[in-house]
Amino acid sequence: MEGDDILTINQMVDAYPAFPEATLRWWIFNAARNGFEKCIIRIGGRIYIDRRTFIGWLDEHRMVQS
Image (cartoon, rainbow, N blue to C red; front, side):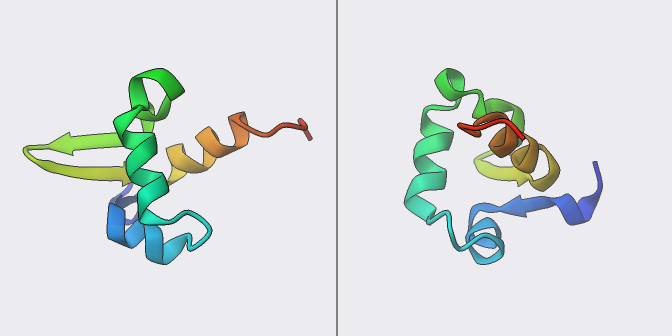
């Protein structure tokens, strides 16, 4: 894990505009059920997302495997 791969929710929205803030927050709220917890880093009240783990998580959710 590298520092450039750790993003805030707002940075994720800027980097990946296909995923609005509301969607990211829904995934975070339901992280225990959807497996998104592996993408999250919680420090105090702040939530960060590991970009590389996020990309892997998205790939796991493809309907058609490549």
